[in-house]
Length: 191
Image (cartoon, rainbow, N blue to C red; front, side, top):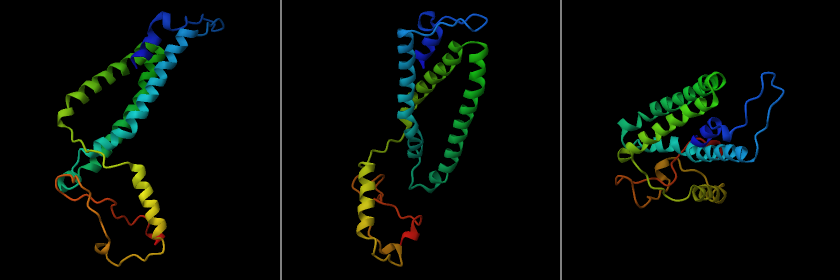
C-alpha cells in the first residue's frame, strides 16, 4: 500500500495529468509502470496470504471444548463478516470519492495508514492469542477420507455412532482427545 501510495503521489512515479480536453495524455513509462505493477502484485500476494487465514485464526481463539466459548463463535463470525462488508462498502464509496475529488495519493494513503495501524494493533495483542499447532497436512486428511471412502463404500454403518472407531491424536489440546475425523451427517445419503 505504501508503494502504491508513492506511485500515485510522487510526480516522478506517475505520468503528468492530461490537459483539460483530455485528448493530450502522456502514457506511463518504464519505471512508473514497474513500480505500479510491483505495488499491485505485492497487494495481491498479501491478500492471498491473509484472506484464507484470518477467519481460521479467529476461530482458533475459541476453545472448542469450552461450551461458554463455543457458543460465542457464531457471534464472532457474524461480526467478522459484517465488518468485512462495511470495509468493502467504504472502499468502493468513500475512498473512490476521495480518489476522484481529492487525489489518488490520499485515496491510497489513508488505507495504507489504516493498514499500518491494524498491523501495530495485531502485533500488540500477539501475546494474548491462542496458537494451535498444525496437526499434519490438510491434503493428507483429504487423501485419507478419499481412500477410506473408496475402501469402505460397501460397508454398512453401525446403528450407533459409539461403535465407530476413533483414533486419538497425540499432542492433544488441553488434555482432551482430539478426533481425527469428526462425525457428520452431511453425506448420509451416500450410505
